[in-house]
Amino acid sequence: MSNNEQQKRAAAEAAYEYVVEGEYLGVGTGSTVNHFIDVLAERRPAIKGCVSSSEATTARLKRAGFDVETLNFAGDLSVYVDGADEVSPQLALIKGGGGAMTREKIIAQVSDTFVCMVDTSKQVDVLGAFPLPIEVIEMGRSAVARALVKMGGLPELREDFRSDNGHPIIDVYNLDLTDPKAVEARINAIPGVVTVGLFAQRPADVLIVAGADGVTTKK
Ligand code: 5RP
Image (tube, rainbow, N blue to C red; front, side):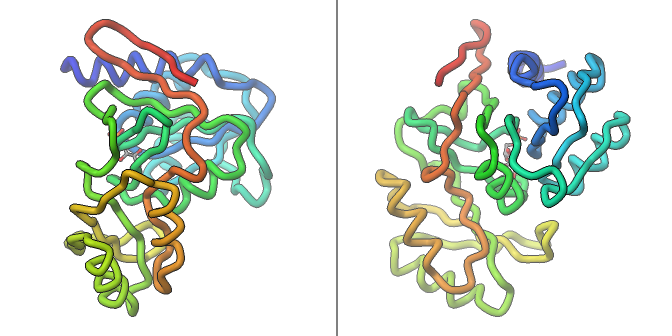
């Protein structure tokens, strides 16, 4: 395993401590989450089942023998575990590198504790070096892109990609994200936007950071 994969595994093991037995567990998407699912598969906690944020995570959870339930059935969750593409000191996040941010945001919103796992390379003082993913309705994608240009952004359509919800994703460079809550509200108000991958209004509650010197936790 490469150093980076070892760090993801270490973060996943630390996140496992937040799993609550007897309840449904929210599970995010991505390579760090895949390590978390491996840890779940090895330790087999007595959870009721999982609520998944993507088709890929659902398939992996099922292969590992876990029940996957809809959020409509499970209701509000105690714990949601996911990764991120960037994290600020206030635990605001950019997510959606894997294109799953719509379901991720819905799950995060109804979870008491959002546990986010990253490696040190994803910690930034100000969000925005990572292009901001925005899921859009196909017919509105050019209109949304023009609105983002007016905000100073440089939108790029993600090539040959559809989200699990069937929508395109625009990756936006160059946005000023010094006030991420305000930018999130502004982008949410553009007609045609399904979900912006800024998690500032509902940031992570617990940040697990894996680095060369081990794992640290921030709340
Ligand atoms: C998917 C996400 C992921 O959490 C994010 O892209 C991080 O992925 P990885 O753990 O592979 O670096 O937001 O939509």
